[in-house]
Image 1 (cartoon, rainbow, N blue to C red):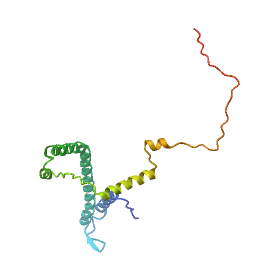
Image 2 (image 1 turned 45 degrees about the horizontal axis):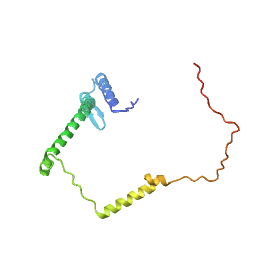
Image 3 (image 1 turned 90 degrees about the vertical axis):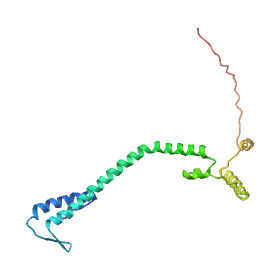
Image 4 (image 1 turned 120 degrees about the vertical axis):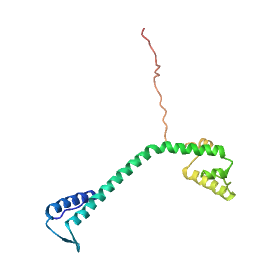
Length: 170
């Protein structure tokens, strides 16, 4: 009979069952030959116990990590806001001193003016985008008039005129 092992937790359960079975049935054996090596029942139980120990240590480490991640998730928004406020304060106080800002790890943003080629390329790109999206300004929209062709309009003539009356009963 073979035991189908499906997951790491199941491996630990099977190892515990093997330890229990070995303690019950291998007590009178001196040596066991497994995988080309010989083991005493105590050595076999120790090796199997290491599987159980490793799995329990991994599970404990996962639980610790998850707890620390939960703490980080809870505290991080306030800490990020504090960091952002500190950066804003440092920029306001030392904004004219790039060397002091560098001490805080803040790099100043230097705006480089666009070259003539970049300006021409940007204008062409804007025009192409407007053409592709059929974007129009106010004056362009006012200039558009609808043409209706092929519609026959028949006038409606009424023989009698109905005059609405409002009568109040008081």
